[in-house]
Length: 485
Image 1: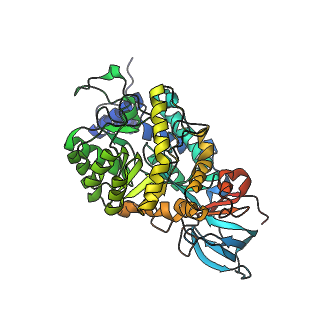
Image 2 (image 1 turned 135 degrees about the vertical axis):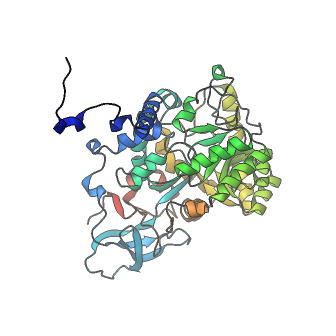
Image 3 (image 1 turned 120 degrees about the vertical axis):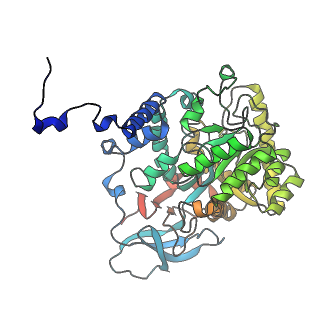
């Protein structure tokens, strides 16, 4: 039986004249279908995080303070000076520090928090973090539904702030949607400088395919890691340009490429050189055209020297570099972003004897690398690179406090604040947070910690944030406050 609609209701008829059959609508439907079939990372995460029913954000967090906040009666480590500025106050208005004032000064209409003579310092910055990959195991990363991985990462982002890390430089993984949700105030988390997918050659440190997925042909699907946005396989100058430009399009503040082997990957030996100088220069040129820079995963002298010759601005790891290479890093004005890889109780765990042997070799190189960096006045940055370790993320501050073996406490804190902020600022026009970071001064972002004790005397205070951090403020919003108002 057919039903004929009267003229009044003809617009309700569904047929080829309907808008849903337009080329634009059909293209959209095809994209949705493709995205669902591949469990698209960014679209799935955006939908998940934007749902208000999750109730992740409390009403107090969702809104910035309506009045200025005066943190009174504090001794200030400003991020650069090795001595505390005693008996001061910090006035916060909106998301910025408005002024440093005398502790006795009154500010009309300001909410006052008496900090009881405790130490106030900038929020810490982790220069080598993986927002999406730190808090899950490797098997979960490769097998779980992608929206689940991102929701776990959102939980870990809040824990990161509560450990006192208000900014992270994310050097690999699809953190764009997480960053957006944090920046919009939907969830709690640190500022994120995203690199997006790690650019890797075939067989490189970011090639997570199984042997059974080879060889790749023009008809092959992207690997699971590529679909998730964790890595992007590119061979040759043209492909490198394309993949780098894709990450810039997505919002990368800097680009991460893989220049040598590593411990976590199954197939590439740690001494392997990855990417030719021509390919590296293509990545550097694409990033430079957008006003930003390239950082590179590299351990050996050969890998680091090739990267420097190609114009790479930041060396990630480098524990196997010799003294001549350290000199070259200094002469190039590049950064050396190093991690406390010490093969101790806090280290990433690996199953195979070969991986554990490589880990031990890198641990022995860590002390040598730090000493060489200091000797030649290399611009050093500190990060953790906690990876696939749900339990390990809790040791973030503890691991970075280990650098006090080579630096004075004040220098460790300076590197974790203003120093790492300077590295993040290399992103130039792609810098998502253009105000001052890692400093307590007028005009800087109000990313502030109040510590029960003096970390310049006892660096272990940053290793126990649940006990020592009495107030945590990020972007002018209070995430934790156990002080009396």
